[in-house]
Image (tube, rainbow over all chains, first blue to last red; front, side, top):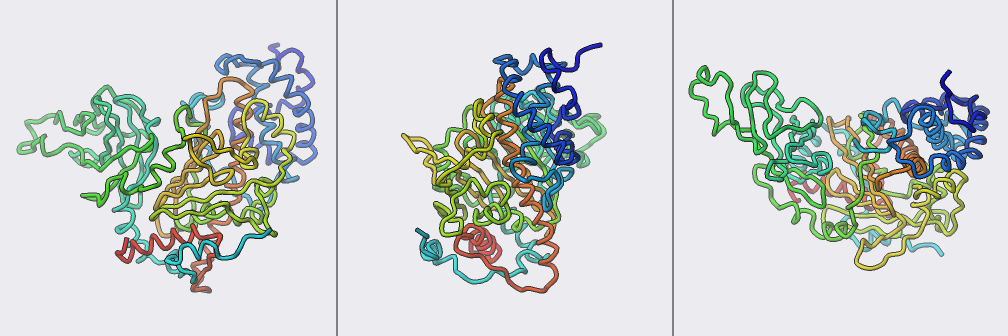
Length: 118
Length: 396
């Protein structure tokens, strides 16, 4: 079986659900998770992301794919999840316009997930 | 120490202090006048040159309020030109995609009439069956187009009353000192809302609401002076203006911000940090500066990024908000994470702003109130309303 995360990051396997390739999907995951689930993901990613960024190092984004891309998408999900934990203290805060109408059109850019403009 | 009241009203007495009629937001007649006396006369930003970087590249801009869509194309000669995106044959669009590239010629997909990048009609298909149709008289219909610092502007008037540079006035020199080179498109949002276009802009024209509406997000990144937010500056420049936002006395970044800051600057940090002005570069009024270019364009300048808003009226109670962010190119995973964190720090407060828009718009229609109010810190919102009203009344 093909591995789902790079060697050394097996402890993140229970959180694979957070690895989503677009902002819309990461935001949906953030809004559909409980506070407890969000806290657990936040805690482990805050602890493990530095190792992930060390693992990626100076490697160009264009060369990050497969299991590595999954790990990167989990790091990007931390950016979403941090708003739940650090800002709102709530995964579904009231009085926020829904992302289904606040459309991240950059998700359709061919290399958006890898940081390129188009 | 708290700031003296009414400092901007004292500086700009011509803006008045009175209430603002609700009619400006709800009246179809007023909206029809805005269309003719603002949008059909003033220079309008429709994008940046990066959307069509090479000769033959083009993009399409929808201007629903003027019942048209525009083709902005970079010619083989390197010049940017704008045309109504409409074939002279029967009115079909010439460009069918939001952006694209051609090798010097665009052919209408309907029946194949061909235009070059200067809008000239170079081929009428089945020409012998079109007796009396003169190609020289039937090119694409041009629209005035001008570039400033990479920003593409159009003017729908037959003869613009001012050049773009005259229109921008001192704003051109002020913003022009910001170094726009080296930034690439990083994010883009589009929100189609049931709201008047001025209501949509007003939350972006004052920072006073930050500690209230953005209590959970941006409030921590601004200075509170005597329990209130006080702009570091509000300046009016003709129909345009700028506000500067005050950094807090102390800012403790949360853990994720600290992590992101190893690789790049997060937005909350950018908001929360005092910028040192040096040399000939752009002179920041606050930790971030927000320029409003009349009637519907914003350029937000921060340390290490900039973003733009285009607010397009569709109807008196419907508008499209286009948000675009520009960052230095990211190369590594860490840099991408820093940019993602920064982007979300900007996006979430804007989603909070958005939540108010449709509710306000719907309630203004009730007729329960004839006026709304702008305080001194809301001078830039008053300035927009006044500027539009001066145009509507034929005074600007």
